[in-house]
Amino acid sequence: MSATPADGTPIDGAPLPLNTEALRKDFPLLARTVNGRPIVYLDAAASALQPRSVIDAMTRYYERSHANVHRGVYATAEEATALYERARLAAGRFVGAPNPAAEVVFTKNTTESLNLVARSWGRDNLRAGDAVLLTEMEHHSNIVPWMLLSEELGGLDLRYLPVDGDGRLVLDDLERLLDGVKVVGISAMSNVLGTINPVRLVADAAHRHGAVVVADGAQLVPHAPVDVQELGADFIAYSGHKAMGPTGIGVLWGRAELLESMPPFLGGGGMILDVKLDSFRPAPPPARFEAGTPPIAEAVGLTAALAYLDDIGMERIRAHERALTDHALARLDEKLGRDVTIFGPPAGPDRGGVLSFAYRDVHAHDLAQVLDQYGVCVRPGHHCAKPLMRTLGVQATARASLSLFSDDNDIEVLIEGLLEAGRLFG
Amino acid sequence: MADLEELYREIILDHYRSPRNRGELASPPAHRVEGFNPLCGDEVVVSLLVEDGTLADLKIGGSGCSISQSSASLMSAAVKGKPLDEVRRLINTFKGMMSIHEASLGHDHPHDGNGSGAEVLEGEPEEIDLDKLGELAALQGVVKFPVRIKCATLSWNALAQGLDEVAAGA
Ligand SMILES: Cc1ncc(COP(=O)(O)O)c(C=O)c1O
Image (cartoon, rainbow over all chains, first blue to last red; front, side, top):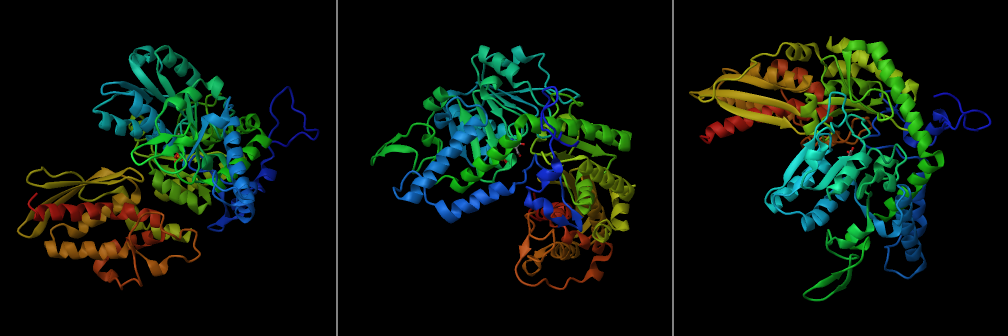
């Protein structure tokens, strides 16, 4: 937004503003035009763009170091193994894991991480009739795995924390809802509303009831500083591709003693200590949960992505995106007034850079189609949160979500496109 | 914005704003079918009444984007009162128009590729007789936007399913 002070020192301890113009040059895809216009990428919540350093790191890996991990003894195999294990440390340190080497499991994505918890910890610890507390704003990936488990176990008592008119969790009944609950699933930040949830408060209460807490960090981890020890959850999941890394790699952090107690998830190579004709002994975590050849190049890319975010600083990224969110909320209101309805909390510390909206009565699909003509990438639909859509009383929303390189101009082009949609659909 | 104007022809906007044959028929005797587009949550409910080998009456319910709703409305106007074999032929012709042909994939258009899960047919497209489609031909611009093909075919698939179910005596 504004320029970086020449001497580079923070003013009053406030994070330094980002120079988005310079940062944009790091992202090759932003150089592309669509429909004759520069891309205005407002879909980071679905998947973020990659800086060149990530793409280069993966290319370099394939050109110089590729081999399968944990098996070969030749030079490149050792290099590949070292790079893969270094990624584990990076993925853990990024969220403040006290012992990343033992506590970080690589998966395919957030969805697989959450399924792993349900399939492994859940199947081992839950019985028919046990209560599970979720929130109405969960992504399907933190709902459906529990439903699958419920079917398998012969019925779990699935409960939901409701969402209020501002898109915040209603916690008035938290204690009552927690009664008898074994596991709590909570999104750290909503991918529809942008709400940053009070995970700590919910986790502390859940722990008093003896429940285990599974946080979905897919949206929060890439956009704000996260420290698992402060967050208070027992598990947290996030995706590489939403953190400017490659697709195909996800992270599950879990408390060491919980991972230690859990049975394997998938069976195969890499997750065993020994196999006989009639039995096997599982390896200790994290290997126990990583059957088969893992996403090695993706792990290398993830290391580069997290280093890129760290170099800029998560405090600064959050400050930038928060300021731009506030600005966007104000501009949308100023230019479109009552024609636009924005879902989620008003500007403030619990508001992340995800803006779901309705514009007049133009369907989200049609909005997104018109915006595409302006090069604007937004997402229409239910955002894999159908229960929340029902609560909001809408079928679909259009969603614009911010990245560290997003700026005022992106918001202006978005508004220009919306006005055109308004004209077209009258 | 030439592509957009091709997509959102006046006829389409007109059927979107003033949909024909809205509502539901009492079931029974009518047969009721729901169609969902899991990608965007669009919903269509087709009620159909078959009598003496004709589609005697038909109504459309549900809600969704301009393409799914106008396609349903245009469909209802085109098939209502028609003999079943003619309805079937129209369904096939329409779905033919809405298919992406392999030969047309891979050119350098920002919307190329088939991320939509729309049907991809091998080889060159067959000639579709647009005259037979009448007003429905207005929807041909949708093919340039593969993600939207599912919106356009939603009500047609529901209708085809309904006819099958009626034929099977369901
Ligand atoms: C809050 C939230 N949870 C989970 C997911 C699933 O992530 P993935 O598709 O990478 O598994 C997403 C992304 O769509 C999300 O936004």
